[in-house]
Every structure is written in structure tokens, then in C-alpha cells.
Image (cartoon, rainbow, N blue to C red):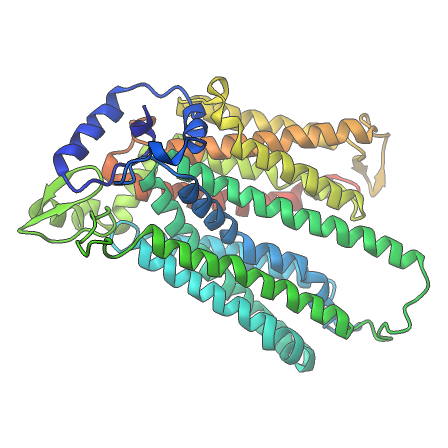
Length: 487
């Protein structure tokens, strides 16, 4: 049963074909067996690496976390970056909006460019290059940009430099996301689940840090004025040092990913023999090409790279055939983004995000492993995604009031904080559950008859592209929702 959930990277094509036939005919009732596989003793693993291991799982978990790491650290340091602008600067109030807009739109655009070459280049090389790019940009931000360069730049030049840095992080994040999702799709559902869980895990960590900062900010405002505080509102040396430390700490998981990916995808085996080729590392051998699932001739390979199956056209064909599940993962985040705009900033808001991210992490990591909750039909997943629309009117009834002619009317129907956080918990859990299901099904031929085995990496990367598209549409929708609510 374990072989159904992972891609078997054996050197014999006949063995791969046997595994493929077994995968297609054996039923898959859920990912509970995946969880059990994670806890098995190492003595049960085969030397060929057919079974998943904890090391592989946590490597993909960490890769998922690093995908969103730079974005989350950027969010944490936004108050510091804003404070570097003079008090009288018109950019001070709108800088966070500019940063989030440029990063989100840049992420979507760069993912579109990255998608054009999925299936035609080595995703391992792309993964390594993007990790090195993020490591370099993160190190430069920690020093010298944040403590030495940004404080001395004029406002306009500082703003332009910050936008360029944001786009650089967006570029690296996009290509890393494309590569990680493509590789996870090739490896199997367990690795895809690990990537989604890692993304939720880093969000929980950052949310906890933001809650701590918010609480400390309230206590600081209630205490006496710090004599060391800058009179013009600019950050102190201690604040700059804290920001620099946060960015330097972010380099560590990126460096670990660089080392672990080299072990996950070694160029040669320990015996010096060339390892079995993955589908993104197809090699010519007497006119034949091998991938993880099938063997096909040079003529077929050439045909797959031109005409209607080449590049963008092939991705578009996979996107259309996989439209139901891709719409599901996009719509999850279209609905998810507007509600956070419903509350005024305070300690309550960081607690809101922490509650959401904890439940989202639980939904991503554990709910898909429950057989009863593992929906295998793409249409059922789409209906579950659409059903989350009901959360929007529910949130409108929580601690908010509609506006009429510039004045608020009526009182909130749901005015209990405890009930509100219960709704937020369900909201986050459903977000993580459906997004993980969608990403797993989108790139699994045994669950999704719309795609072929040699299209797994394209399908996985496309699902990530649709997820980001949902984030973009959701962020724009949040402005519309905010118009109806009390600010």
C-alpha cells in the first residue's frame, strides 16, 4: 500500500511500470497510512529509498516553511522599515500597503514566468539557485542594508530601494515555490502534504512573534517614556539590532535547506554510479529517455517539447483539464483574505492571526490524514471550497456594523469574543484542510484522472500558481469588503 503514495525511483523501467500499474489499480482511501509510515522504524526502509522517511518529510517541511520565510520576516520588520521614514513623509502611512502589493503581484507574475519552463529544466538546479538567491538577499538585508544603508538614504531613494528589495524577495520566492511544488508533486502526496504543513508552521511562528511584539508594545506605551527613544520617531540602535538579528536568524533555515537538498538529490550515488533519473533530469541514453514513471523514445520526447504540448501550451492544456481542483485551491484563498480586514488593529488582531494560523496548520497537517475527511473527488473538494463563502457573512456579524451614509447602523449580532475565535478556528482549519487536499489531488494521477503521470510536476506547479492567484484576488477583494464595514 505504501508504494501507492510515493514515487518509486528505481533504475529498472520494468519495476517502475509495475509500480505504476499497482498505483493505478489500488484504491486510496486517505493519508492515514502516510502518517503511520512516518513513524515506522528505520529497519523497515529499503536501501533504494522507496519508503518515505522522517528526514525526507522534514526536509520538505522546511522547504515549505522557507517559501514563506522572507515574506513573513518582511511583515515582522515592517514597523521598523516604516520608522526609517521621516515623520512628515507621505510614504510613512502607505509603505506597508506598497510592500504587500508589490510582493503579492510580483509573486504572481514571476510564478507565471516560472511556469513556462516547468518540465523542461532541472527543478533541482532551480531550487538550489533560488535558495542561494534568498540566502544572499537575506544576508544583505541583515547587513549592511538595514543597519547601515537604509538609515542614511533620502526618503525617495529609500522607498525605491525597498521596493526593489521586495521584488527581489518575490522573485526568489516565486521560483523556489515553483521548484519545490514540482519536486513534491513528483515525489508523492506525503511530500506535498509536508510542504503545505511547513507553510502553515512558519505562519504560526511569525504570528506568535507578532503577538509578543503587540503585548510588549501595550506595556511599553503604559509605562514611562524611554529616555533613549529617538525624539523624531526614528528607530533606536537596539531596534535596528533586533531587526538585524531577525534577518540573520532567517538565513539559518535557508542554509539548512541548501544542505539538505544536496542530500535529497545527489548527483551521484555512493558507489559512483549514476543515480536513477528523475523526470526533470531526463538523460539521453541510446535514443531513449527515462522519467520516474515511464520510458519513452527520443521521438516522443521531441514531440512532447513542441507543438501543442510545448511550454505554455502544454501547461495551459493541463490547467484546463485540472480546472476543477485548481479553482478549488484558488477560491480557498479568495475567501480567506477578506476577513482579516474586519477588525481594528490591536492585540486582538494579532491574536486573531495566531488563532487562524494554528488552526490552519492543524488543518493542513492532520485533517487530510483522517480517512473520513480525505475527499478524493475533485468536485467534492470544489463544493467544500465554495461552501467557505458562508464565512464572509458570518464574519460581518462578528463585532462589526454595516455603514449607511457614513454612519454605523445597528449593533453586532455576534458580540462574543469566545464565539468569534471559535469561528476563526473553524475558518483556519477549513482553509488548511481544503488547500492541502487540493494540492495533493492536483498532482496525483491515482486520485486525479485529469492528468497523466508525466504531467505531475506541471500540475503541481500550476496548482501553486492558482493558489497565488487566489491570494491576489483575495487581497483585492479585501478592499471591497472593507468598504462595507466600519473602519
